[in-house]
Length: 93
Image (cartoon, rainbow, N blue to C red):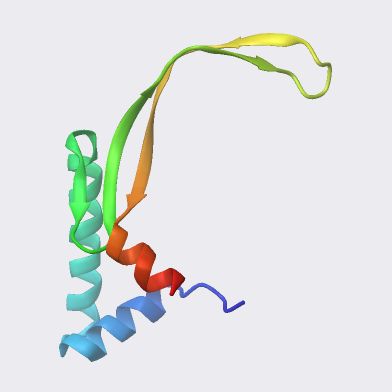
């Protein structure tokens, strides 16, 4: 299995493919990330890749794996990434 690309490798490849400087490519990525953070609670979609969504989890019962004791887990909000159908097909084929 190949290693994941680092941020600098992604920036270099983006700059090369789009004809940008590395600073411009890094700024583009930073802008996209900050927009994702800002708008994730309303649902942030990157067409062809996926969508960040805020999901409310209800309270539930859990079990402490060490002692086996039943515990109550409170309700909370979590961020999930839903992969687009096109991305799934491209990656899995």
